[in-house]
Image (tube, rainbow, N blue to C red; front, top):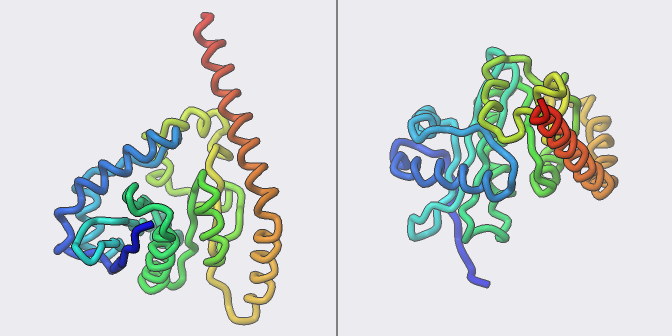
Length: 226
């Protein structure tokens, strides 16, 4: 296995030229997984870079390796670390975990009072989120900002989200809540419980995916009969 050294920094105007390759890889990755992430244009990614609300990973030679950005919802009450992507040739090196840690730190600096949430279908991301202090929650615990949920319209599973009245989908909702010092022990206990049972949780998410995708197929077959 090759050894790579990555530099992960807050993205700036100096990184604007990477926006196209980032958005292209986001789309290709979503197609390969058979799931969806909200599509973003190169212009949108460039805006995040110029606002200082993204982190980018590069090799020592300046080759793009990974990216993630921050979105704020509900007037800043909620923050999402979105669009996490790692270039295919740099996967399996633990880069996703490093990027998640950096974007989490940046989120805490820019939005210290905000709840940080994420929607993911990936077990690896769930594990990383757990290490950072997230716990699984219901969709009702997330932002009710309509603009956020509109972003799901470009996902291949948006139909399932609609069928479930926006209360559930293939993605697992996870949430980090800033807490005062005295509440941290209780919060740590919840995270430890999740870590102990993560294998069971992974099986449950696979079952949920199987059930929901079959529900979607059944509905589409029924509609085609009329």
